[in-house]
Image 1 (tube, one colour):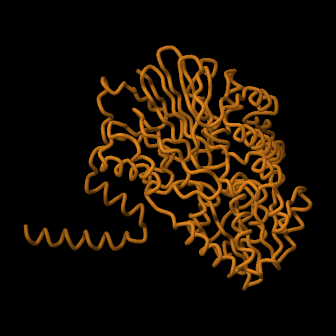
Image 2 (cartoon, rainbow, N blue to C red):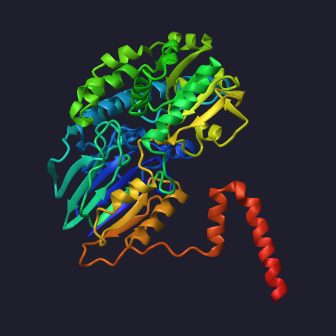
Image 3 (cartoon, rainbow, N blue to C red):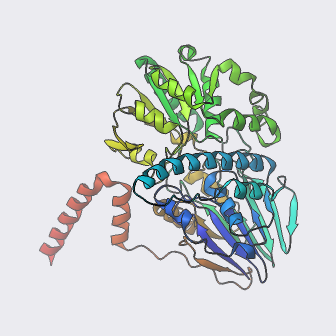
Length: 503
C-alpha cells in the first residue's frame, strides 16, 4: 500500500505538492508557492519533516510548483531533485528573480516597520537556501525510466511549458501518474501531452475543469481584434505575462501577425523584464523540447525581425511610462508583483489604454480583481481607477480546458481512480463529476488529506463524491452565474407559491 498526502493545490490552484510514501520511504512531487488569497500558507508549518523525505520529483518550473523548494532545503531537505534539463535552468532563474522581488518588498516593508518600532520581516528563503537547492538538481530526460530507492519513475511531456512533465511513479505494485499541469491537446510551442494508457491512480489538475477555451484560430482572431482596437486608438497596450512560456507564446503570436497587420510595425514593443531575454534564450537551447518548426524561431533571428525590445534596468522601465503608444509585456502574470504593477499604476486609469489578460488569474490576486469588475484597485499603496479597456483571452492558456482534460483522462482504463487537484472548488468538482459519468472513480481532496492507495486487486474503489442535493446544485449554479441570481430567486419563488396553492 502507498499513502498519498495532498499538501497543496487542494480545491485551489497554487501550492502544488504531494507526499507519496511506501512502507519505509517518502518522496515529494513538487513543492510550490501559495499565491493570491492563500499566500500566508507559505509561512505556515510545512506539514512534514523535510529530513524524512528521500527525493523530490519536479514537474515544471512555475513557482506554484517549484517556489518553496528552497524553504524545504532551509529546513533540512538534502535529497536529489529530479527534473528535466530545461526545467532545472528555468527554475534557477525564477528562484533568482523571486529572491530579488522578495528583497525589494522586504526593504519597503522594513522601512515602515522601523517607523512603527517593529522588528524587520524575515525572508521566506535566502540566497544560501536557493544555492543549496540548486546543487541538488539531477537532470532526467523525457521517456527514460529512472529508479531511486524503491520508486521507479518516468517523466513524459505534459504539453504545458518548456520541459514540463507528467510523471509516472511505480512502487510496491502500484502505479500513480501525476499529471502536473497539462497543456491543451492542440499545442503551439511544446509537444502535446503524452497519452498514458495505464495507472492505478491519477492525480489530475483541474484548473479549467468546468469550461472550454476557444480554439487556436478563434483565439488568434480575438487577439487580433484587441490589438486592432488599440492600434485604432493609438493607445498603450499592457499585457501581464508569465515570464516563462506565456511571454514566448505572445512573442510568437505577434510575429505571426506581423505580415497581416502592417500597422504593428509602427507600434514599439517591449518585454519589460530583466529575465526576459535570459528566459527566451533557454528556449533556444532546447529545441528537442519544442515542436520542430519552433526551433529556428527561438534562435533569436525572428525576434530581432519583430523589433522587440528587451528592457533590463529600472530606469529604462520607468521611461516607458512616458509613452502613449506602445505594447508592453511585463510580469507578474497575475499582477501580484513585478514591473506590471508600475505600468498598471500609470495606465489603468486611462480609458484609451488596453489591458490584455492572457493567463489564469487566481482568486485574491490583483489581476482577478480587475477582470472580476473592480472599479478601483489599490496598487503600491495608491487607489487607481479601472477605466482602461479590458480583454481576457483564455485561449492562450498553457492549461488544458475541460474537453482536453477529459480527452487525456479517457486514455486510462476504467479501473483507474482519479484524485482531482489544482483547481478551485467548482472546476474541480465539475471535472470529478464528468469523470464519474464516464465510469471512473474520483475524489476531490482537501488540503493535507491523506489517501490510502491500494493495489488493483485489494483496493476498494475511492468513493465517488456524494450526489449533490438540490440546494447544493442551486448554490453552485448561482456561484457560477451570479448574474442569474435574481432569475433563480424569481423561479423558486413562483414554484413555491404554486406548490403551496396545490397543497
